[in-house]
Image 1 (tube, rainbow, N blue to C red):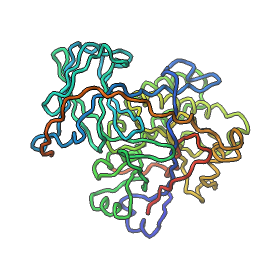
Image 2 (tube, rainbow, N blue to C red; image 1 turned 90 degrees about the vertical axis):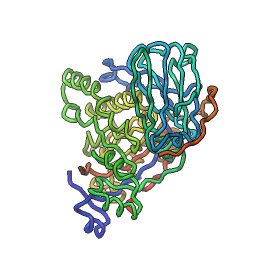
Image 3 (cartoon, one colour; image 1 turned 45 degrees about the vertical axis):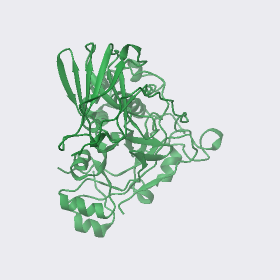
Length: 430
């Protein structure tokens, strides 16, 4: 795909290192979902989109010390150690959850099965808490902690076996139309591509760049201390099959859905990822905008797959916002996605319509939508769910702690909220 450059003088200096492209982001509140994940046939056909799965709500979390990252010894990060009295009924997973309150929640769970018995928990080698899992509402073990960019070591012992995990401790929240990183508002300024060495990374940081986007952006962000939009793009695998016969599409879609956990794992496990990009320009072209006539078969299939892909990714990391980089003004982005991303160059993109036009075509600006006030892109955010803190042991005393791909055009992302007119937050290169 042809790459368009902005800021020509700057690109002339750095052309060998990366390409600069402008994109805009507007963020919307997370959807309040009420359904369950299914790989049944109704995801692939029928008149309705699959319903977004409900996101887990933290239940009686055990709080880590506020300065948990400073409890290591001789530069070794502190470990959270858990011993289960009963063997887990299946494989254990750890996932990150947000409650839009500035804290990160970690849930230790088994898929579709409940943990039982007792759990003895230590942190940094000292007792922290004891939990009775038989009375846990979710049949899982919850922790809360102050977020920071990085990872935490979790050691789980059960049935004579020991497993080590290292979940990220980064928290990304979408509150109304603003993205928050570790409890603080975050204004993105980014590029598509990335630096080829530390010297270039230092230079682009001096001009305000804090976020990378592209197929290798997540890795580069970790190496050079940026945040990233991870272009996992699992949906692009289906691009050649959206117009196939029903039998062929169903077969390919089932294989695709089974591959989503593996294809999104790297992005989910990276502490420098802000947004998981599910696809990039899978459909494209001109035509009648949404609401003027029925969507064609490829676009309907793409919408269904976007929701299904989001549902699978959210099972493993409910916290991480999902989005789709769109360039098709005839595609209606499903409400289930956290972020709308429109590939654009603001007022002069290759489709010759600006971001405002894209928002209008999506029905998100007046006079569209109910009462001519704009499309309600998602359900209104509910009040935060009260969380009962589990009893914890006193905090232990503090001790000293311790290559490039340009991915198409830069997106304009937009999240969802009940507000009538989303405001664009420029994602610029300066």
